[in-house]
Length: 232
Length: 218
Image (tube, rainbow over all chains, first blue to last red):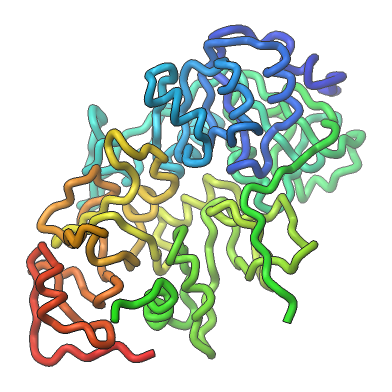
C-alpha cells in the first residue's frame, strides 16, 4: 500500500475554505512546517484549527493567523503570539481555550472510536459551563466529546511508504493522537523510507491511520526558548 | 526579608521525597530542580512528553526536538522516557505523579487556585494547569503573598477565574509556608525577619497561627 504524495502542495490540495484541521506540535516543536507553508501559499480561509498552541507571530500557525486564514482556534495555550491576542481582543478570531490534557484526550478518543470521555480537568471552573458533570467514586468529572476533524496534519521523524510513523523525542507530543483522529491524516516526515525498513516494534503510529505521506524539506525547527548552561 | 524566587524554590525543594515523580510548572517552580537535596532521587515529568528531564544543554548542544513544557531547550537524564501528550496526561490523571508545583495569581482559604486568566487583560490559556490541579495527589503553590499594591493574594475566595477547586495543599510564598486545611490557611514557617503580624496583615483569608512559628533557615 503506497501512500506517498509528491509534496506538501499535493498533500493539502483538496483542503477547502471552512475545513476543520488538526495540527500537531507543542509550541514550535514537532509542527508540520511544510504543510503550514503550503496552507499559507494556498490561502484558504475560514479554517478551524485545533492545535495546542498558535505558533509565534512569524512562524507556525502564526503565519496563517497573519493572513487571517483562521476563523476559530481551539488550543490550550496561546501566550506567545501578539497578533493572536490582537485578533482575539478585536473579535476577529474565535477562540476556545481548553485544558491541555482534555485537548489530547479528545483527539485520542476520536482515534479510539470513543464518542466522549470523562475528565476531572476544569470541574468547578468556567470550562465546565454547560457540560454534563458526573460523579464516579465520589469525584466529579466533565463529559468531553471526541473531536471531529476533516484533516489531521502531523510531523514525524521517520515514516515509510505504508504510512507508519516514528517521532523523535518531545517532538512526539500531540502528533500521534492527532494522526489517529483525522478523517484524512497527512504526515510529513524528515526521512521517508520504503516499507519494511522501519522496525515494526518501534512504530508509534501504525500506517492504517495515515492517508498521505511525504518527505518534507528544509526544516527550520525554530527554538522558542533557547536555554543553556555554562561549562564549568 | 521576603524570600527571593530562588529561596522560594529552595524551600519547596525540601518537600521532595526520595522516589517522587514531580511536575514543575513554569517560572519559580522550574527553579526547584536546582535545589534537589543530596541523596534524594526524583524524576521530573514534563507534560509535553518526558520523564527524566535533565538540566539545560551546554551551548551548541541545544536540540530543537527536546524541550520542556515551558518550551525551553533541555536534556534528559539516564533512564528517561518519551511519550505522547495523551499518555502524559493519562499518568497525571491516574495519580502517578506524586507532586505538582505551580505558580498562582490567587489561592483561596479552601484551596481553590486561579492562575490562567485575567478577564480583559490577559488571555494566554490554562495549558496543562487545569489537568494537573484536578488530579495531582499533592499540590504545592509557589507565589508572592501580595501584589505590588500590597493586596493579599491569599483570599477568602478567589476573584479571578478558577483553575481548580479545593486542590492546593501547601503554599510557599515570599513571606511564609502555609498549609491549606479544612479550617483555612495554617501558618507553618515564616521568612527570616518577617513577623507573624506582617503575615497576618497580608493574608486576607482565614489564617490559623498556633504556638511559636519558626523562621526558615537558608
